[in-house]
Length: 222
Image 1 (tube, one colour):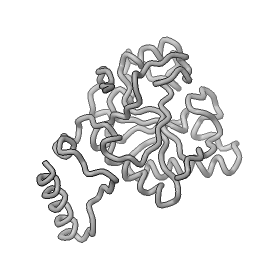
Image 2 (cartoon, helix red, strand yellow):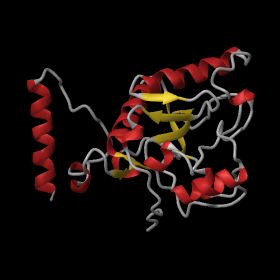
Image 3 (tube, helix red, strand yellow):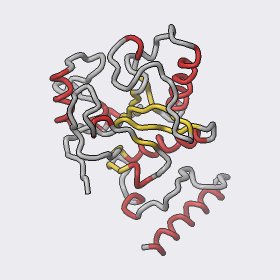
Image 4 (tube, one colour):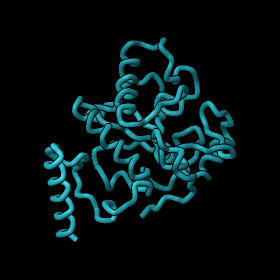
């Protein structure tokens, strides 16, 4: 397997040289597993096996969330492969500026979406599972914030899952530094195909997320 991986990586580098690129597009601290390399673009991947340069604060794997209930059995950021690749590119850009992504949520089973809707049936903040569902259910959305490379979280004006106007991405009445932090997050995410929503500064969906089917499989916590 190691020999196969070396051949794949060498081939990628040769392609980059021939096309005027000095290195492969996606740089990580890991050699990609053979199963990941052969994963279709629309398949699910675990971000941790792709790149270790992310921070995690999965509230739904704890009771520190608006449900007041642990609904994830473990911390596992599952995304469609092309979404994960785009997120890695975003993180590389942020790291060059001294920051990195801190993740709150990625793929979310539809069953969890139903629980959320039962407690907060407000489509401004929770997607209706009985309608189109959430891009989270498709593996095409992320909830996240920024932190320094030393682990200090940037001030975005509210905590994650704050249901109110202060969390709205179009709220321009906040202090200048908060607006600057949000703008850095928004612009960098949008540069790689992610789109924000008006009511939650932390939520971004991938531009092609609707092409993925809704899923409800549980996390594989091993």
